[in-house]
Length: 568
Ligand code: NAP
Image (tube, rainbow, N blue to C red; front, top):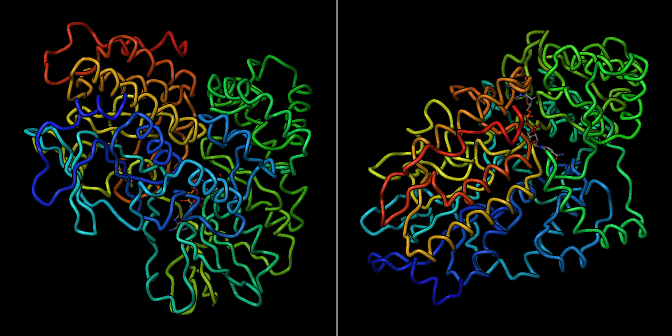
């Protein structure tokens, strides 16, 4: 599509007085928003993007906390759409740290001249569908109004830090930092009494980094996480050269995998081998590090007994590392299946508890009562602190979408539509919200696969839908209610079979007060997800209603026939 032809789908009526008009509005400057800007610009569309942060980078712009590091291999956690970028950029470590990730993001933004399309430090307050003029009207906290026929919510699953829900947090007189809003200037921990609340992926990375630096470190743990050795290594020149030669194959394998990355996947059922063989395979995976454990057997998220055996294996490693038996016991995750919370990868988390200045506060037996002016008060007493780090997580998956007042057809709001839980078709669109697209949206694979692979997929899918519309002179697209419900059935039915819902986590929304709980992610794997999305398009978009022709579809939505893809 070139600039000339794109006008056919972009200028129904002139912009309202005071509003600025483009073809596509993009909200968010993370990996999804950056690729969307590039892709739609290449299609010749006029666009404007908005980002609340001061630069591109999304979670990696905000999460500057000590120890922040990606836990997918850097080779996988990078854009695949540009062979030039693949060849020109060289990763230094198997799992890149946040500063290197930001350098990569900066490299991409410069190479593709993305920044001029963004308004930074700008929050979108509202997005409203104007049906008469077939445009999304977007207002920002700068008081500006923008209009475009298409609006892309590239707002990401982990953008809104969970509001601190501990009484007294505002009274603390020391330094209070949320990990996801980490200051840009260096923070010194030397001689400081530091508290960390939260032991998810973020807390674990902070603890192992800050423990050796702080005067005293108090770790407030409510639910212990399963964590496995990352075994990060520098990437040797020969290895990098080989990767660069083989990128097309690596990307193809990633796109055809469950997680959107190159990782061993097994077809071996847990109880198909002897106990000794199982133990040996688990030991190998532990030694190999990363998420190798997840690739040892095919049924770890389906067979509770198998899952428990793996969980016990990981638990058994803790006292081998942590010298204090009481601390080791309290660090053991219990009461939920392994991998039903996001598995963590660490480099020295358990070892950190052997330092004399590092103290575990077990909030299950000694709950936090309040945060006082001086520190944290648990049932057993108060610990005075100079600094308190909140690693308490996010209003994940839906928080960023709901932070924008999105008003669709007939005045319906996303807040109403999602009052019992997020609904969407393929995680990409919603019935009642024409021409509004999400990248990595709820009910897609979201947090269960490589976010960059999903982002590229989603933007490409959106671009193909726009091209389809242009070719036919169509101005609006929206999934039918039946198609959306059918997709939600697919998501729910797959989730029911998995152990993933058996833990209280941000994945199921239980971490945020009053949030509807339930898994709003597609657990069938990235490859299967791609097949569903491709089928929806290849089928002539039969599950979507287009304008100006608003005839309902004439046949059953094809995505109702979900099972051939996953075999479930
Ligand atoms: P999280 O997994 O939701 O963990 C939040 C932690 O804070 C939990 O331990 C939680 O305990 C605790 N917490 C929350 N409120 C609390 C309270 N009032 N009192 C005591 N404890 C409280 O959040 P996260 O660690 O920020 O990780 C979120 C996601 O970000 C991860 O799952 C991952 O997808 C992503 N991430 C990835 C990386 C990486 O790639 N390496 C690094 C960091 C984050 P309960 O569980 O008991 O509620």
